[in-house]
Image (cartoon, rainbow, N blue to C red):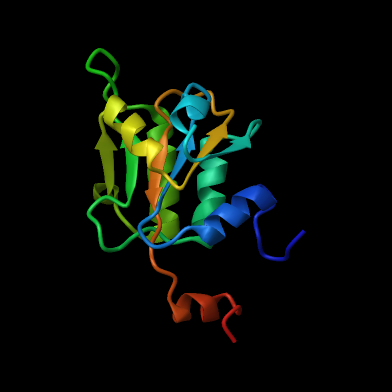
Amino acid sequence: MLKGIPQILSPELLKALCEMGHGDYLVIADGNFPAQSVGKDTRVIRCDGHGVPELLQAILKVIPTDTYVEHPVNLMAPEPQDPKHFPIWDTIYDIVERAEGRSREKIGYIERFAFYEESKKAFAVIATGEQAVYANVMLQKGVITPDMLTETGHGE
């Protein structure tokens, strides 16, 4: 165990987060997402039994999102016949806003099949047990600056 690290972040997931560089993508996938087939050429990290919101919240405690792009956080856009909004999105918006101080306008939407294609290029795909539909989140990692390290007491 480590002090100050959310316990939900497994050693395998922490290793991936550490190894990611600025601009790398991370997908936090719901339980319906085809993580194994989409992620066959990248790493798939299993987090069965956990939901997207708690993993997103924990991940955003240890990495920032990219400030150099318009949408550092993207959700999978629904199909035309599906509802245009899902309750879990409000939770995701709130988590991103609290962690990053960014408004909903910084969250983009990627068409479902384009989301799958982009996910193939992700540094890692986290397969969760999330039951909510359209709860797939793609994060683009930002830059860790020296002041971020000293804020937490790790850079001194």
